Image (cartoon, rainbow, N blue to C red; front, side, top):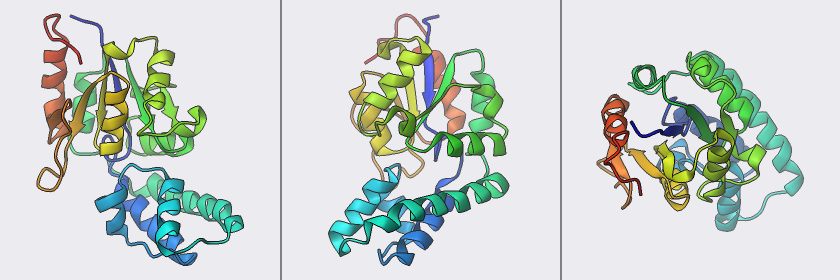
Length: 224
């Protein structure tokens, strides 16, 4: 078998945190006068950095006092972490897929802070599968769709980008991993409204993942 490293996105790929995140964002952003509905996150901003969302909303609706943004984000994340710890569930099929793939080196690559990643994985019983292999864009200071976050994770894991398979549900994440030169599996949970980008492998359920990884592990399979 060809050696592989699996790099998973967190929100929307391993854990069903996006509805909670979208709800907390809507509460916080509306409080400072930036019109935002939870559906806006799912429909337009899924996977994007929080400050990117703020900047785009300010472009559309006018700037808010910059001094309010840091406290706003801290409060939003405190509220979110409380809800993640009690209400979060794994994405359907994620627990089973990870169990089937547990002998392969795995890491988590997220645009979110490490505390959020860890809270999410612990709340859903997935933390022990990844250990310390959690890679936050806040620590690396580079965010998807920039490829540097995936390249950073590959380097720390000790794998060339060409030997990594990234599993990501968001288009910004898929774009990031493709630009990094990795094989990319797009978990397309909304196939009726979203297309898998060219160059990525599309699946619609995490239950499909072990079969795809088994195929990619064969020496005859070329990696992009």
